[in-house]
Figure 1 (cartoon, rainbow, N blue to C red):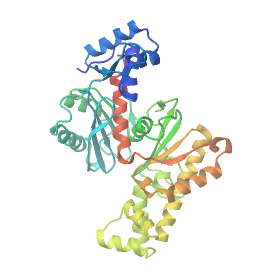
Figure 2: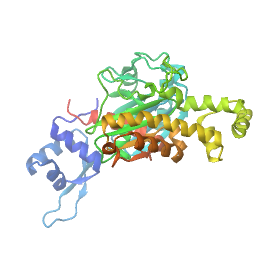
Figure 3: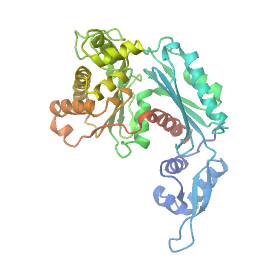
Figure 4: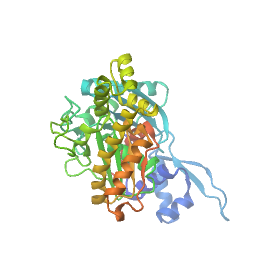
Length: 393
């Protein structure tokens, strides 16, 4: 059983060491405002629990040199980011530095047994490299709504067979450690908060544009999940009642207009209609098209592909403008596979948002592309479970 801190002081000390790295006892005492004797009691107890250890002496500050404390180097946490078409698995140390990261294609529609076995196989590869003899906790992200309290997906539109599947319980039993499950975009938001562009922002939106579209909402430094866990499901906000039918059954959702799946659909239609020689050639070569092909077409200056991306950016900007006027965030981060389309997409989103939202809400609002690429989800997953491990029961 993984040791846990026993009180709020120990929790704060562990999180400081996680977020800021090794610190001297003197520095820790100044931050947490504990007397030297009380601090010694708490750190000694954390050492007994094998959560921290000494790491030499700090530089002299004019008197006796203070000892340095760090998190135990044996701590290992796992992040599993399950997407619609791929899985990423990472092992980190207690400071959430990635020690090993593997990914593989996998279709979430194959069901929970197949997909979770695949995730554990990938983790097995990392453990086989000696990266994690003992696992202290695991965080898992899935591409659909999640009951965070119960650790189960709830009626996820693109995940047949996953409804109410006990993901948390199943993986916890197999790994023998605490496990938490959340929506994938919530974990990306946590990743940005821990290691990305949102490190100093308490209120922000993390927008993922991939096979689907979702939004992580961070309020006062915490993920806002809503009453039932479906907060941020912006992909199913309607933008055109006469638009294409969405996987949720409604017509004209944002996700049906612009997502990885929608781009692939529209690219095939454009290729077959003769509108894009570039996409037609790709379709003839591969028999199918993806958002990557559209990105390549944009890079090649294909006017049809550029128009598709701009139209998609306009739709995303339309939805974001409403969210920003309502929520007034300090930052908007755009991530996910389709965000790889880059600045042509970002420019369109920004243009619509700045034009349609109130100047008071957008006057100092950065809208940026994530710089964490494919690690935001796994970092966020380890941050999620780390917050759990580093909290008093």
